[in-house]
Length: 131
Image (cartoon, rainbow, N blue to C red; front, side, top):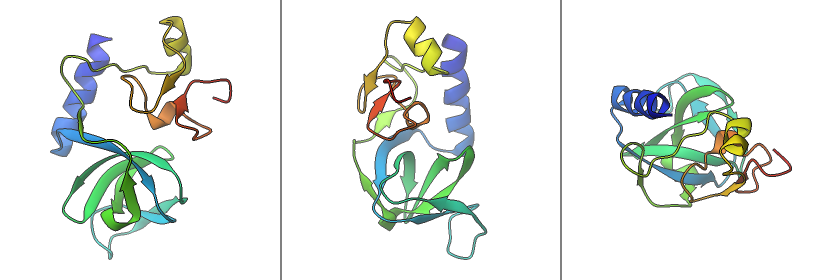
């Protein structure tokens, strides 16, 4: 567990981002390789999709469909405020099986351990009966 938290903190450091928030797309949004309207489009994030974002300026770094990229900040609405990705109180579960084994499933949006990758039905509850 401690190793996973360190890896997450390292990846955040490498991205140059230290805080993230949960946001929902307000409409379909292009996931771009780099911040900017001229950057290559990697895919389309459907409207109403819950994402973990780290925003700076007009762009937000996020992951969708196993691809990391950027979406325009104007196309997402914050759901939760910024939360540290590392440090005391951070909980990370690699899978729903790991969350269930720890006796923590299901977890609601905003609670430690929740992440969109474990909320496949996008109902704001990770590892419930639909996931």
